[in-house]
Image 1 (cartoon, helix red, strand yellow):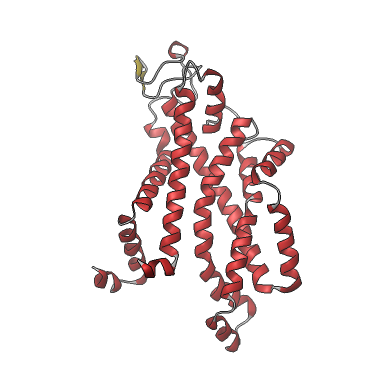
Image 2 (cartoon, one colour):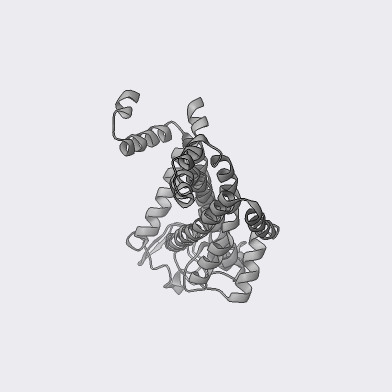
Length: 297
């Protein structure tokens, strides 16, 4: 099997190797399954939702899981307006995926470029750029986001920009450290000896060799962003109704937790499972992309 994979074209070889490694990793397989289900629900939510997640049914208020009437089955119960919890969880997955992916793309792009330039140039510019990073890292992430949200205002687009523009410092620190190691490698020195320009060396020889660290970090940061979005929506500083988010569902159900426990329990489970799935996937990606770990396996 190994010989057959090795004889395939590089891209197909890498894909088959990833699949084979994942099948032998319970953590990677579990994380991939969870993330795949969440993404599919986000993409095809309107087609699979049994009820309208926004439209209420006052005759079905505070119904327990399994309740059914002429409009259908409320598998996970209903809320104070008679809205189906299951349908709202599906709708909330769209916001979580959108916020998580787009904000991580923004912060990852900024952070990777920042860390790449800082580590490659070095000297006083590197020291100045890292002092800026240190100052931002000194402020807890969630406090910084809450402060900016309170000043700028709430909204889906605003929330994505805030999370994207405040989460880049972690990437910058990690990528800068990787660049400092890679730029001393023999193939980089050889590229200089061959007369290649600094920009070409940075983009062609250094960036591809540090991008795997950014990919692993991005996978973990998606989970952090999902938690941040849920926290801000719960506090009223994130997405506003009628848009459905898991954080808003928790906020709506907290005052009914003793009489309608399902209103908070199931959105909380959705957040927990999603974040765990992303973390599991990130953990597997770290092992898969690390040549030292692959060598020991």
